[in-house]
Amino acid sequence: MPCGSKDSSLEKQSVLFLHCEHSITSSCFLPCLLSGCITSKSLLCTGLWPSNGCGLKGLHVFALAFALEVSVGKTNTVMALNNSNVLLPCTFTTCIGFQDLVFTWYFNSTEMIYHGKIKSKASEPLLVARNPRVEFVGSTTKKDNNISILLKNVDFSDAGKYTCHVKNPKEKNAQHNATIFLTVVQKMVEADNTVTLIIVGVVGGLIGLLILFMLIKRVVLFIIKKTQDGKKECLVSSSGNDNTENGLAGSKAEQKAPPKA
Image 1 (cartoon, rainbow, N blue to C red):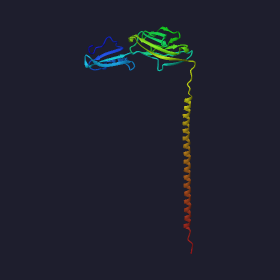
Image 2 (spheres, rainbow, N blue to C red; image 1 turned 45 degrees about the horizontal axis):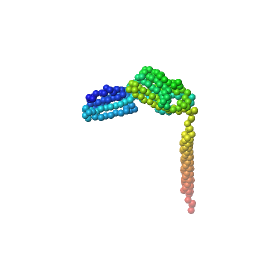
Image 3 (spheres, rainbow, N blue to C red; image 1 turned 120 degrees about the vertical axis):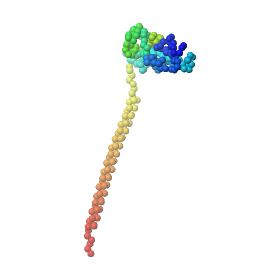
Image 4 (cartoon, helix red, strand yellow; image 1 turned 60 degrees about the vertical axis):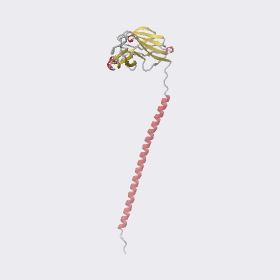
């Protein structure tokens, strides 16, 4: 392959195969980077190796990126009450768009409970087949490609694994799926907060005792200080009185005339 040429057999959106003759430049990857195709999640492999035709100056850069991703949210577990309705969330993302996209919900990997097809971003999903108790509640014409379903009147037999599978023909039939686990209970059990309440009570009690101790300490110190100040005043007053009395006695003795001979 000549230096700087591209392999036309590889699709631009999913596979990038470039040969830069003199150095590696970001211009080769700029279109795909701007579109968001190459991300930390979707980039599967990159490789660099010397070109046979250009020696050490030439490098082949190969990047394989699949943009289709399916998600069921931050948690993959859902709990529902018996005889209630439960939402099973699912969204998908693709940086190059989609056309005639097919999505399917499976129960325990084998039983199909919903099958739909989306012609384009401008159209809502077309129902192909579904379980009578399953209702589509998502939308693909808005910002998020939401293909969530609502399972009605669940019972204990509905507990298990639910898989949201998506296939995008526009990405060379790229496929991806995500799984969510449903648990059905008779009643919601309240969390036992006894230990937490005990810990909070103990900590609160200790803090209260510490505050009470500090208050008592301040009161006692205040009383002691007042008592000491009172004693000092008494001592000063008593000392002044003694000096006064001694001074008066001395004066009278000095003023007393000596006896006549």
